[in-house]
Image (cartoon, rainbow, N blue to C red; front, top):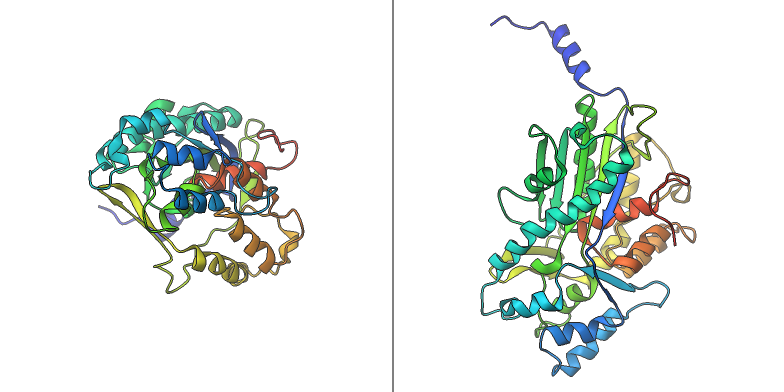
Length: 371
């Protein structure tokens, strides 16, 4: 085989890359139909878990659900699992009985369907046919199958058999940013690529009854909701059809050393389980935000004032958002989009960031109506 000259290889490589930066071209979100107000949730949760006799624990759970000022706390959450579904699966409440298979069987059907609802909205806003999507990136904490959510989502949307699929499992709350970071790389290194990102979360995989590890189990049951977010990412927008909403100038990731114990999760025979040390997580998020951001901008050679930026922050909890607000000395309203999403949906893990991005879209760009 003849060796290709270096100059030719460079030209081929240059031709494969996009000319401009990746951009968010469309956004869509979706939630299950079951909506439960946070005020009603303690009564609902202890009823469906047959735990109404645990009155002391229920009182503590109410404090978790109602924590924070009325104007800033979560008001409602959406769920795929219903009282009827929980009643049909008593093994979900009995840690002595394996339940992972049943949970995953529910998720492998429901997760692609919810993701498709969000993706269809994004594709409609995008204005091009679904068959023009070249790459699919799906992130979820609610599955462990092969074929996985990405395969079934591609079938539901009618994507081409040649669509290049990537599946991200168990990335927790960082799944949304991880998927967008990957989409940026794909769009900029594959000329003409159009990447559909879908993040979908179903808490049926992690639904448990109360147990004597307060506040660990109850924190999770008080905070998380179900939802799906979809984003289409591409470089070199095709005018007049495509309308970029946000340019993706740079992407980075930072790990705070020695924090592996603060947040972890694993699939067990009883479903998705894990540990969240909120007492450590809340100050860690706030105390390290400025240093991590400064390092990221320093690598770009850019000096910024925090209040000159717009912010799309994953609202892990109201207290984490408050810490970031305080430590970065942000003006009032800078994190309003994050607070609205937390208020209206709770923490939807990886999908949450896309909801915040939708809230923060430029004026007159269509999409979500601000409340």
